Length: 275
Image 1 (cartoon, rainbow, N blue to C red):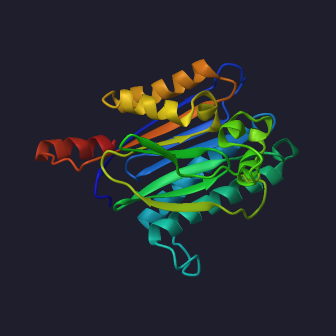
Image 2: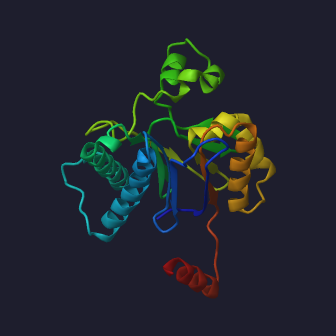
């Protein structure tokens, strides 16, 4: 269990020019999980890949939580239970996408990014592959938690491009790592502390094509008292107005101080979650 309360919101938009939305988002307050996946491939393959990614990830975590699925003792025993659970779920999601891709020529080139976060005590645990991102806003400062697995970011690491140039570069869309392309892939697993007042944004590249880090931070701070769903919609809508050349998805997560609820409030919350 977490030492804080969490509010989640998720919004996805097709953007201005795409015929399909190949992004998928998922939030689950009972699992303490938020996920963004940005699919790729011809026909509807990208849409299917990203859908498999988020659904298998969440379903596997749910099965592990209920005891319907056991993590093998030999699976990365040095990691914490939550890290093992998240990574095993990501690996099973990749295997499901890869086997679907192999089943038909139509799906052969399909793949997807995956960026998900799970909460444990006073920490967030993230699993990540591709160029979707997690930003953390804390006390007015925004930082990118994840590293893009893209050719443009490789050029940044080698000093050939600045980060601002990379975000506008034509090679920005060329991924060096994604789900579904290989049977076994390497995910980044990140663990970082969170505290009340923090805001996390998980997003597909469509969001940061239309908004700089500073612009994202500005919206989050200016509209901090706005209901979280409206705040998430505002981020996506503003990015779409500025760019809109791609699908745009965002998950916004607010970390709140634990609320001291009265018994009737606790009962209402319990039954609203149980529906």
